[in-house]
Image (tube, rainbow, N blue to C red):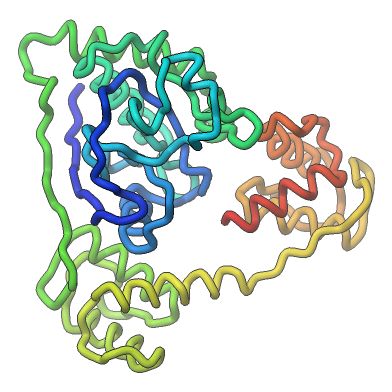
Length: 349
C-alpha cells in the first residue's frame, strides 16, 4: 500500500512561523474537531485566517496534505501543557509533528483512516520512531481540554490501542517489509497555490472557493464547484465583490478571500440553537427536548427525529456526545454541565 503526499504549504504568518524543529522526537495525533471539514478546507482556513494555531498535516479520504513543512514548527499543542515535557523531554511544538484526521460529513472514514494510519507509519519509518512509544494522542497531552483523536475514532469503532496496532502493522507491511517499492519517499505532488486566483486556474483550491461562493449565496448553476475558474466563477466573484464594496476585478485575492470567510461565518452564526436549563432525561417531553435535539443534530449527534420526546435515540445521542469529554459523565442525562459543553461545541462549529 502506498499513498501520495500532497505538499501545499500555507504562507508564513501566525500559523506558520518558518522556525525549524530541533528534531522530530515524536508524533501528536489529532482530529480536527470539526466534522465535515476537509483537508483543503483546513488548509485554506489556516492560509487565509492565520490563527495562532496550526498542524503539519491534514488527512481526509482524498488527501494526505502537508500544509507546513515537517522540518518546521507548527503550533498544535499549548506550551503551558507539561505532559509532553515529562514524556519526551521537549515541547510538542518544538520536537513533534502534528497530524490531523478529518472526519464526518461526506468524508469516508475508512478511506481517511487508512491514510491516517499509513502516514503515521511513514513518519515512524522516516524518523526511526516506535509507534508504541513515540505516538501520543492530543488528549493525553491536554486532557482537560481535548479528546482528539478519539473524538473521531470511537464513533467509528476504533480504540487508541487498535490504532497503534494498525500503525505497527502498516510500518512492518508497507515500509520495513517492502523492498520492491520505494515507499520511503512516496510521490509528492507540490501544488502550492499562489494568489490571486483568476480565470483559467484549476484545482482543489479553486473548488473550495467555488463551494464558499455558493455557501455565501452566489450560485454557480451551470458548472457548480468543478475546480475550474471559468467565466461563471469570475462573474460570481465580481457580483460578490460589488455586493460587499470590494474592488471589482473578478480575481480572488487576500481581501476577497477574507471577506468570503467572514460572510460564511456570519451566515453560519445566524442560526440560533437555544438550550434549556435544568435536567432532562429519558421519558421527558416538550419544547425543551426539541431544543436539545436540534442542537445535537447540528453537531452531528443526530437523534433521528426532532420530535420533542426524550426517547432511547436522544438518550444515546446525549451519551455519545458526553463521551467526547472527560469532564462529563456519559449517562445520557442532559444537565448544566452537558449544556455548557454543547454550547462550546456549537460555538466552535
